[in-house]
Amino acid sequence: MILPRLKSINMLNLTILFTILGIISVVVFLRPIHAKDNKQRVMPVEVMVIKKQPVRIWKNFSGRLTAVDFVEIRPQASGHITDVRFKGGQLVNKGDILYVIDSRPYKAAVMKAKADLVTALNRKDLAEKEYSRSKDLIKTKMISQRIYDERSTIKLVAESIVNSAKAQLSQAKINLGYAYVKAPVSGRISRTEVTMGNLVSAGSNAPLLTSIVSNDSIYADFEVDEQTYLRYMQNDSFNKPATQKIPVELRLQSDEIVYKGKIYAFDNRIDPSSGTIRARAVFDNSQGNLLPGMYARMRLGSPTKKNIILLSERAIGTDQNRKFVYVVNRENKTTYREVKLSDSIDGSRVVDFGLKPGEKVVVRGLMRVRPDMLVEPVVVQDASGKNNLVSRS
Image (cartoon, rainbow, N blue to C red):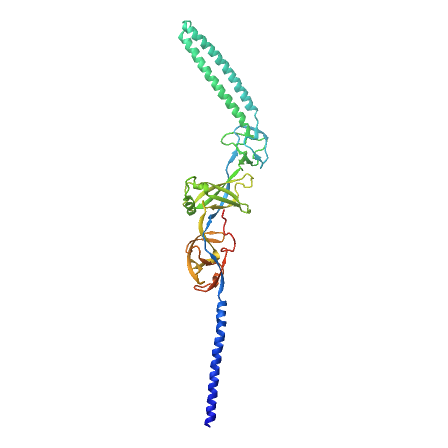
């Protein structure tokens, strides 16, 4: 009875021993596999190496186009319109005759003024001869002093009458010139508001005939916020005013053509109700594509380029009212970093505080990243994978 029991106990011990040895073998065999699996679980993430780059900051605004020169044509002479020498919408040059008002009365006035001038000259000539004779006679006491004084006065009056006649002739010629309504500026003319045959009158109630807008250049008016105005105007500029160094770009509402101009002037006050100041830019319009009244999208550039850090908005997370990024350290572990941002440029943000050149920032897959997480950084060119984030012009 004892021998079989001992034999059974030995078999049980051997079974337990072999089981323990098997477990140890399995653990030893699977350990490198688990280590290999852990290594494979390191998540690759796209990162960008932070660097400063010269960039011109642009601000977007809305504006309206206005004419540099806008002239309303009104008659300065009264009479019937006898001729209209233009068509609405055509380009006219300064000095072109637009309307002809019945000039016959004004021509007659010029002829009368010329005749009056001739009469005045003849009277002046006679007065000078009489005065010359009286000078010789007064020396010999052949005439009295009263007669001499009368002839001297007649001579002076005759000279004044001549001057008056000359002035009347000049005025008559001016009135005759008003009968030919001319373009005071070059540009595109509107339609005629008064047609041929109608009677027009000069004066304060003179009717509007037409209008002309210049088209060689054009203004764009827009409102600039106070902060942008102060930032741009405080630029160091000793050789020329800061406004002349501020670039401006214009796009029409349904057009991608970019028109480049410059700031013409800022207003002299900030509007307290809106906190903005009115700005005026001037653009070349030699092609005549820009018309007064058009809506325009404006871009106002900083006077100079600045070395700044740009980061894609996809790389920036939001934690309540704070902005943060994940920085990959030398051990390839992610670190939570709070940043302060300012301007937005073509899908990127300007980083004012929180990052330094040379640091690696996760730019894609931010939702899968956690602090102190081991990752495999894959360096991309920039935050968007493109060569340029903003215009460097």
